[in-house]
Image 1 (cartoon, rainbow, N blue to C red):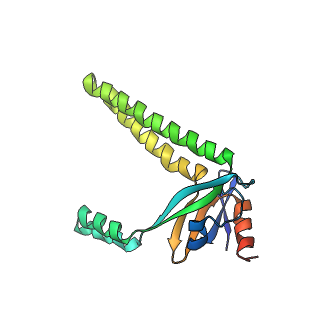
Image 2 (cartoon, rainbow, N blue to C red):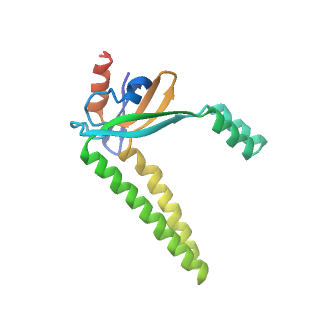
Image 3 (tube, rainbow, N blue to C red):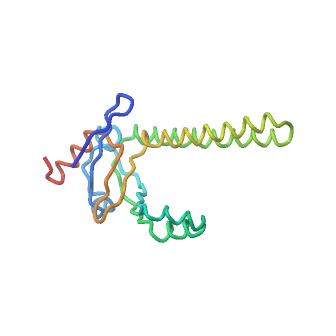
Length: 170
C-alpha cells in the first residue's frame, strides 16, 4: 500500500488511512513528518477534485469554478505530529506571511515611486508563491480523498510503515 518517493535525497513515503479513522484521530501515535513519537494531533483538510472539470475552462472560468466548488470532496482529519514538526510548520507559515507582507510593502513603495521597484515587488510575490508551493510538502502532509480512504503523501516512511501495520498490510 505504500511506495517511496525520492526527493532531494530525502525519503518521503505515501500511505493510506480510512476517512473514519482520520476524522476521529485514530491513527498510530507516530509523527507523520518526522517519524518520531507524536505529541499531539493537527487538523488538516484534505481535498480531491475530479479531473474532468478542467474541460470546463473551454466554456469560461466561471463554469470551471462553479463545477470545482460543487465537486470538491473535503475531509478534515486529525494527523499525529510531534512538537518539532508543529514548530517547523508554524515557522514556515510565519516566514511565508512575512515574505508576502514584505513583497506588498515593496510593491506599495514601487507604486508610489518607481517602475523598477514595482517589478521587484512582483518578483518577490512570485518568489514567495514558489517558496510556498515547493515548501508546503516538507512541513505538512497532503492527501487525496478516494471513497472511504485518504491517500496521504509526503509523510515519513516510519509513519507509513506504522499505518501499514495498523491496517494489517505487510
